[in-house]
Amino acid sequence: MAYLIDLQTKSDDRGSLTVIEKVLPFDIKRVYYIYNNADNLPRAKHRHKKTIQATICLKGSVEVYNNNGSTKESFLLNDPSKCLILEPQDWHIMRNFSEDAILLVLASSNYDTEDYIHEEYK
Image (cartoon, rainbow, N blue to C red; front, top):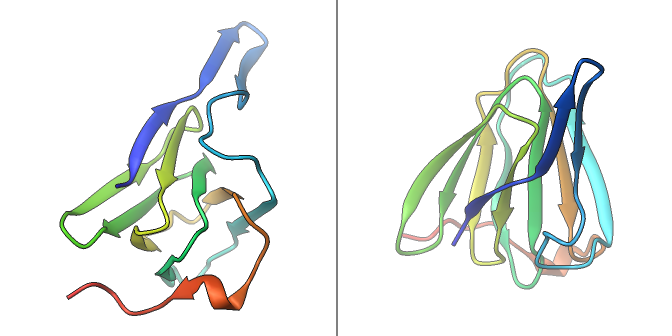
């Protein structure tokens, strides 16, 4: 089931520094980010067989709708110190991107088309 974690953040007059260290439930194998979604089109619409993902909205905001087969829930990502963990069984849609949104995704495995399941749970 998807869940939020707080990332260690230190703030002072110079700004904020957020660290991702020893908090993810996996080793990072792939990093990508989504931005310039000018038409605000939804992304993802899938779940995985094995990949775990950590999503962080670095700028702006993004809604992540999640359905794990028993619970449907939406998460608003609008704080770069919050990280949404998506388990393999979490069918998800990333939507309602703000114009300035930058969504960072850290994944537990390399890209593999065979790892994707596109059909949402009924």
